[in-house]
Image 1 (cartoon, helix red, strand yellow):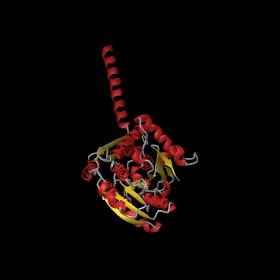
Image 2 (cartoon, one colour):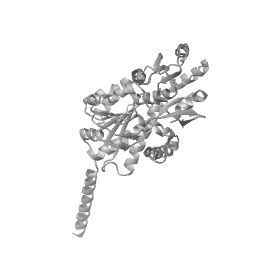
Image 3 (tube, one colour):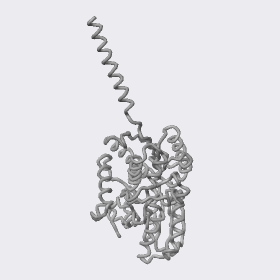
Image 4 (cartoon, one colour):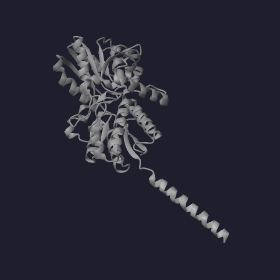
Length: 386
């Protein structure tokens, strides 16, 4: 009788433990699932790899602090290799299979433009890491789309402001044939009259081209006082090398797509003296302590170097800003895509790596040209020139 009683007590205790365990499992909150599409491999890998790294780093950081609103953060990231078809397929997979609340990326303008109709139709927020102004403009047609990089229009404004100060009025442009280059070329043409600049030559190159001397030889035969190269990946560095080989000594200005240590490595000696607009991350130690972005850039760079043993890049900074603003939105909205979208659109005075963001129904980028500084490469490093 005593034995039966003892066994009964043990059974009750075990049942209680099982129920408690089940309750514990039920109490665990459902993860917030965030998608990522980046060009991790391929010609634009120096954009996508730091974006992927940054997204994973921040997710781990959020989870170490208990997640967002008690929900663990799960990131599902795919590599589109810079290919529009793969970008579209990954977007569909993230929406249908992975059931994400939002997507960060893609890395490039043309892949972002390919993905945004899919996320628009699915009414899921997309935060692009690409520069093309058409990604978010006009905002009334891009209701579910946001972006963190400064726009190509802002970059052109900064370049032309610099050229005007140098009394340079005749310019040749050399643009990549991708969406990034097409959008940049449109802005270079549209804004030139505002600054009294004449485009005396307009050449194009492919992102995988290995020789730019034919285009540069044509430019050498014009009255160009400077060359503006608009591209990403290894090609802009090749332009710098080919100019040096041809003895072209007029100034070379690159777009913000080249504003990274990787470009300096690729260009080598030919990079010396090149000028470009850049986000503040590349020169943050030179900023005054009163600049609110300095501390943010310093913190991000410190974390990134500690984890990956290499400096943070502006491109990874795009993913950093996207994740941080999305985290704020999730904190306010929870797992409701429409409310997340609304919270992103209401972002005000967010001090990020790429600038100070003020979103609105008319502006889903939220930056101004002040987010850029002009820099020059000197002795293998970026130097602030204004």
